[in-house]
Image (tube, rainbow, N blue to C red; front, side, top):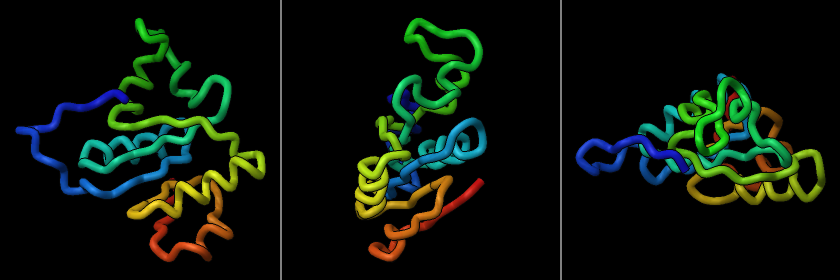
Length: 124
């Protein structure tokens, strides 16, 4: 996880909030980055293989990631889930049921929304 510096070690105003980020490219990752900057725990779900496309944009650094990813991926923990499979959909629902959670999802919550009333679904 790439971490931004916290001022005076003080927790941000969104400390204690968990964000599940399913977005890719610019808008979703940027919004989740800002939530992470404010103290939220951001879990970035990436597709198997190469991960988020921002990892490949531009020149790679010593870690193999691009400058774009160094910025957009800060304050995030990444996991790999194939959301195109039933197992991946089940994992997405399990992540959404974690409490407290706020989901930034590119797709509908469907069954997950029926199971957990605390989900906030945002599209950008």
